Image 1 (cartoon, one colour):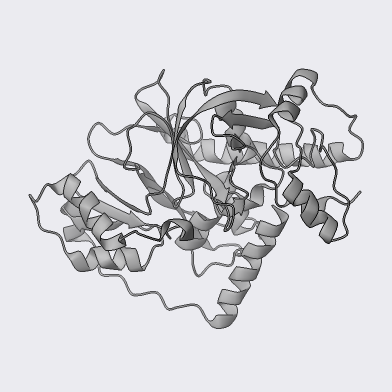
Image 2 (cartoon, one colour):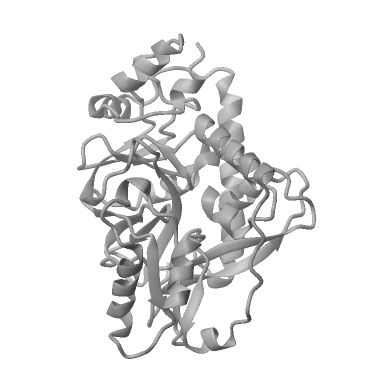
Length: 375
């Protein structure tokens, strides 16, 4: 049975099916799919090992950072050199706990598919904490990133790239909480998906059992918001882009780590903050901006919202260049811009990047659509 296209577009999940899978475990014997699952496990192990190797100097696991004693910024930018000519930019992103859009925006002139041996790749592993209370889980939809403030480890924040709902299947904004955790879930495709599959003349299974073809991956955390989950995926190449039917997708190794440590009843704040601002420990004020989700554009005033956010930080005590704020909003690429302080004074003037040719833009768009369709 060819269910490839069906897996691409999953949506609301049946709680009864998930619970049944949790209690009963896998409902079928793996055959030739075992090799696929084993290969995926090796990739996940490599991703974890790579990120932990990078983080070894701070003696923290993948995705973990010390909360700053002062300020709002964690992590750092760094570069790596491609050594394996077979490696894609997406492989590198996963190994360093970075999502699809993050790695693409940080390396606009590097090929997604063949970066090439010897190419330097920027790893944008520096983050301004989102403008929300530092408790529970905070998911910044425009940023395509999840933050977790563990109650039993108050000096730590964890952060991971995620996928959120694509156009027409927006992930809602609001505050909810985690409920049931399910290991090796089965998945029941929604009626709308079965109709779409029928229109394409493809068979539509009522239930997809646990295994390498299950789009929920091996771990799922249900939310009190009906039909929405935080879960893994069998198509990790799509993590870090708008690709789901509203659920929050994570790399398999990240959801596996979070699964055992995220208590039921944890608050989950689903927010959309495309513009972020924060202080570095040395007194530099940074901002960064991301593409705003189309469904949240109506009624928003990006510049006014940005200036309001900045005013909560500076309280009219310093002067900033509004032109730089406007530039950040006009070029929402996630890059840090220093508005004030030591690093702003020392920052060199960067050449404006040349826009991609129409052919290059089409190639990038086609690549993104390919991943979204197969994720």
